[in-house]
Length: 294
Image (cartoon, rainbow, N blue to C red; front, side, top):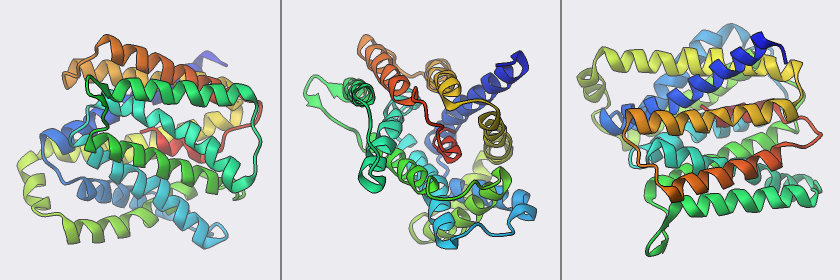
């Protein structure tokens, strides 16, 4: 990998990691309703990428389903989870997404996997269990349940994406924005309260956070990663993208005061090792899997 591309990938991972911690601040500290925050984010993404909306990928229902699963559904669940879960714990639990993608591929597409990938799945699950372990046993907090659901929706969307022809990155972003903005807006209007008053109370920092999430994370970082996938094999990129959870954990400790004990460190190490084993396979990963990251 060229030095310039490595630095670009490192920047992308840094952006994704910081975005996870920033989302915790937005929905946890500032009290912004999570569906409202996600709706605004994807509304901006849709407006910016509108010129690339057409021609619509076919079949239309599938790209809409993928956009909702990997966009609005994925991030809304993550934001709900981050209201109570720490960014560090969420960064580890969400790693269950890659083994979930593998298992869903077996069930839905009849794929067969080698014993090494089964080992990777087992290591990831053991690492996640260590993170959620307490003296009373395995207890998954409400927030981490939502994070786990976030990982599942992203995995399901990734499997559906494998069944589509290649979609240009900005066209994919446009359909993610459209498919997510409408249901998230309706959902926020029905079940959330005080959206605009919370936003006004947070002031300009919230506006800056929202623009960062939409423009820097969704449009720039994801599109840059798509370009890297076009130039390099996933077996090279996958180990390097593990910088994202590491950045999230480090920034979570520094910014939001996450507690990082021995059990958390061991769980993170096992989970990331398992993801690495699963990811290091000869086939190329679907481009859409990037949506699980930031």
